[in-house]
Image (cartoon, rainbow, N blue to C red; front, side, top):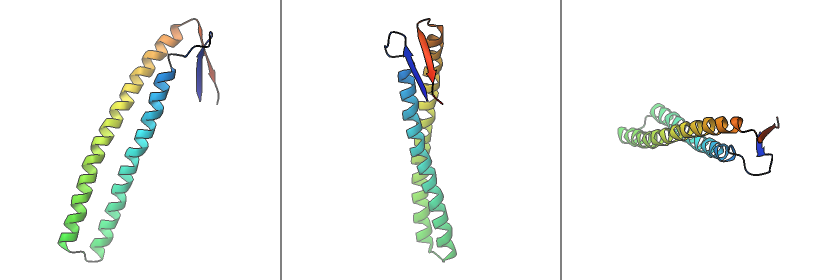
Length: 109
């Protein structure tokens, strides 16, 4: 965990980028859950096929999976963009932070 403060006790320029990073991680967990659900649906489809599901049942599975995958794709694209923005923010803040003479970092591992 990275804790960053200025010597005068004010908030560091790294605080907000680190918060954004935390939110990006939460968003990526949500995206991973969508992928997991798609995998579960694929297994259910396979089981239905083995059990002799009708074409209508198969079509419903495939339609649902397709819709979920499309929504998942959009969520994953959004997650990727959030991580890209966080990366840029962290690089910018770090550059400023390390160039400042009145800052320090305490790293708790």
